[in-house]
Image (cartoon, rainbow, N blue to C red; front, side):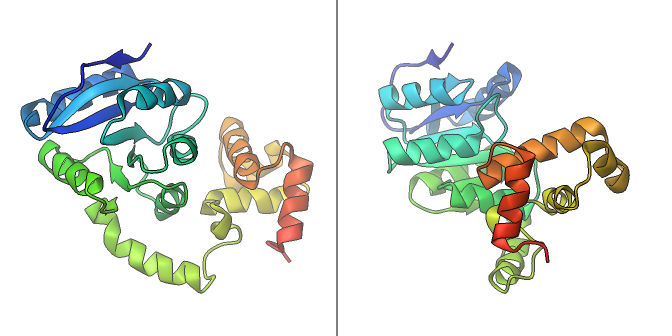
Length: 225
């Protein structure tokens, strides 16, 4: 169930979205010393809950985990973009990976920060994001410039422009080659459950329902020749 605090005046009003109660509590504790600048006015565990809460509170900013049960933080960005176009969303992640960052920006996020961030820096980044700046974790910023240039020159792996990570591209290539999940696991030296997770992610990113459709989409896009 969503938790709500009465609207505050003055400080930046933030809604936190995370499906782990301990993470929400940790973020609130991290931001507590800065109540004059930032105030958590509500929290939600999932996308539907968050959409309703944002519509009710109209916060200055939404701070959401990339990984949520069911729909993701990326889905939240897209759906808020359709319903509340001006709503600013900053995503928190443990993934120090430019491809996740690019996916976040394509989804309309106002920022992508890593969970190892400290309280003072988090507050400063949230203030910048609320003011219209796109904020990116400092450790990723330099790599992003190089990666963006490579992406523009199409030097990334097949499917990078569709949001596929390098590993997901490898999995898709093996699907196109007709490999079973067990064969993919053996070739890539990963577990069966990990393969299943990658396949689900590939299907979602390609917007298809099954492996056959994924192969068709890959061939149609000319990803593998």
